[in-house]
Structure formats: C-alpha cells, structure tokens
Amino acid sequence: MALLRIKYLWKPLLGVLALSLVLPVVVRPQDDEESDQEKNRAPFEVGEATSDLLSSLKQFEETKNWDGAIQAIQGQLRKVKSGSYDEEMLYRALAQQTYQKSDFMGSMAAAEHCLQIDDQHHYLDRRTRRDMLYWVAQIAFNEGSSAKVAAQQAVLYAKADKALDEWLKGTKEKEFTPDNLLFVAMLYFYRAQPGAGAAGVEEKTDREMMEKALQWTDKGLHSMARPRDNFYQLKLAELFQLGRFREGAELLETIIKKKPESKNYWQQLFNTYVQLASEAQEKHDDQAVLTENIRAIVTAERAQKLGFLNSQKDNFNLAVIYLSIGQFGEACGVLDQGLKNNTIERKRENYELLANSLQQIHRNTEAIRTLEDAAKLFPHSGQLEYEIAQIYFADNKSKDAFEHMKRCVEKGGTEDPPIGWMFYAYLALDLKEYDLAIKAAQEVQKYPKHEKEGKQMEDAINATKADREARLKSQGI
Image 1 (cartoon, rainbow, N blue to C red):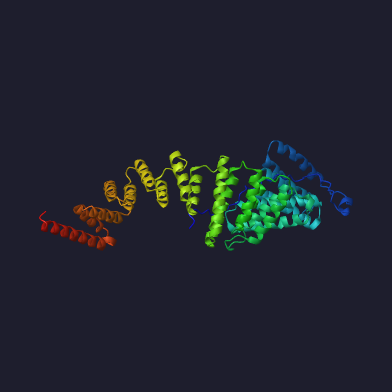
Image 2: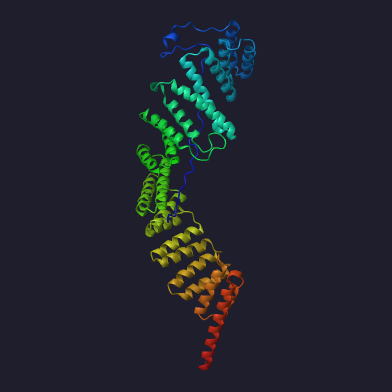
C-alpha cells in the first residue's frame, strides 16, 4: 500500500489578465482587411458639439478627472439622437473613461451599447468592432472570474462567450497574437471549472470545454519559438484536470530539459509521478507502482543535485516512497541522515518511523539507539520507553525490557494504557515480580473494555504465585 499520495486540487494557475486594449475614440483606423464597400464609403462624422466634447476629453485625462469626463459625456448623450453616430462615439468614449476609473462593469456596458448601435447602423469598421468585442469579452471574463454569486458569474461568462465567439469568427488565424491565444485558452479553462456555468449545474469539470482550452493552449505553444511559462502552466493544469497525468509528466520532463533551474517544475514532476503511482496502486498494477515510485525517487535525486526538493518535507517524502516499495535500507539512510542533520523534522513520529524501518531489516540495536536518542529529546514520553521495551522483548531480553517498562510507567505510561499495563504485567510475571504483576493487572481492570481480561490476568498471576509458593514450601525453602 502506498504511503504517500498527492492529490491535485488545481485552482486556476494564472492571475486575471490585465486589460491593455485602448479603444479608438475619434479617428477610425484604416483596416487592411476592410471590404471594398467599407473602403469606398464616406467617413461618418459627428456633430460639432460632440466633436468639441471629444476633443476636450484630453484635458480631463491630463488631470485624471475621470468623473468630470464621464459627467460631460453623459450630458452630451442626453442631447444626441438615439442610434446616431454621435451616440455611438460618445458611448465609445464612455467605455474608455469608465475603464480608466476602474469601473469595469460600466466600461463593459458602454461597449455593449456601441455594439448594439452598430448592429443596427453598421458604423464600425471590421477592426474597430473586433476590438470592441474583445474588450467586452475580456471584462466579462475578468469580472466573472472573481464573481462570488453563481448566477452573476453565469451571466458574465455568457457575455464573454458571446463576444468571444463573434470575435473568433471575425479573426483570421494569422491575426492571432500569443496574448490573444492565451486569453482564449484561459477563458475556456475557467469556463470548464466546476460550477462555472449556469447556477445549479453539476459540480464537475466540463471536459469538453477543458479540451477546447487545451487546443487553444497548444496553438499558443506552437505560436512561439520559446513559449512563455504561463502557457506551460496552463497546459499542465488542463492535463491534470482531465486526469491525463502521464502526458503531464512527459510535458514536465520536456520543460525541465529547457528550464532545469525551476524549482516549481521539479516539484510538479515529483508530485505527478507520485500521483501516477497512486493510480497504479488503485488498479493493483504492482509493476507500475514500482516504476512510477522509482521515477519519483530519481526525480527527487536529480532535483537535489541542483539544490531543489531538499526541504524537511521533501526529504521525508523521499524516505516514505522508499518505504512504500520496500527499500527499507535506503529509507533508513535518508531518515537517519535527515534526523541527524535536521533536514527531516525532529519529531517523535519520525524517530519511531526510523526505528520501525530498522527493525524491518533486523537492525534492532540501531533501532533501540534511535529510540533512546528520541527519548533524550522527548524525556516525558512513556511511549518511547514502551517501544524500546518491545524491541528488547523481541530479542529475548526480558530484564532490559522490564527496566524500560518501569521507566514507561514513571513517565505516565503508554498512549494505550491498558495494553501497556498488560505488557508490564507479563514482563513482571516472567521475571517473577508477582506483586508488581498483580498491581499491573489491577490497573488493566480500570478500563471497562479490558476489565474481564485484567481480572483473568490477575487470577492467573495469583495462581502462578500460589503454585510457586507451594512448591517452595514443599521443598522447605
């Protein structure tokens, strides 16, 4: 049975994307991909009052008077005709100014107004409309990612989905930047998380959506000669949430060849092999359990040569994996060295683990010495004295075992008192210390579940004592 198990609870690995898009406000950019109809149509123009206001916004921006700019735009919006080009341009400016104020929901609402007007009147050229759609998708995604209410999150994600879908349909493959590809992949990754859809959906990963995220992440990875770390991290998270740990391990091995200096990747690779070993354990595939655990061990040793995975926890985990595949000698070496150098936490349980491992390879003298070292660090632990007594007893050294059981009693006994008292009584009886044996048996009877057993033990001791006294008397002793 595997002693170490890593459970992946992958939360999104990357922070919310910062919005860097700046929407055009006054000048309509020339688009190389415009249709002939767009190129040949006359430019739309705003009224003089609107033009003057849009020109004056620079003054508000220089003083960062976002509220003043917003109030001015809203005042002009009340004067212009609904559906006019003036209204569309004012809402575009409003989207810009509310964003500068960090009113992201207000910015998204203004951008949506622009798009609604354009649906009817087609003021926007292809590039500007795409920029507006991307703006809405980004804000809706970011706000949805941090929403606390499931219903609100579902609405925001639906907005992001709708805007992104149109943006994707209007974007040619050559136009995608790595940032675009990362954003699309992240949106699908978040959307695939349990509970990220409509309220009341089943709490499990949307595998189809996660596969979609993985496809876009791969596009991002293939778009650069030297992919950025966030693409690798995102792909790892996707693979792990899909339960594809073998592919995750292969990807990590590839990354580590390129970036051997990254501690996080070494930790992830180690955890992945442990996870694969656990899966093999569940399938009762003993050969795979051994193989994956060996890979975990080799990974830890490779990392330690580079100065990684050398914390107290890392060293302990390495020892535990050795134990899980029956390599007690190797485990003892790691535990012993770690406890001596304080590279494994010096707590009682770790000394006990080392002592138990030493017993597995019949090194009882070293096991006793280990527990005696622990007893110096934990002088009030009766349990350690009990464990030392157990080893001496196994080596047919009842007298030594009894001496440590007396120390055990002096220190308050064992963690399971009735068991400790029964062992004490047995040793005392073996050494013909009848009075002490009887006293120990009486202590056992104080525990209701062991009362009958303690009484039987006391009767047996009294009978043995009486028989011995009778024999001695008959011999005139």
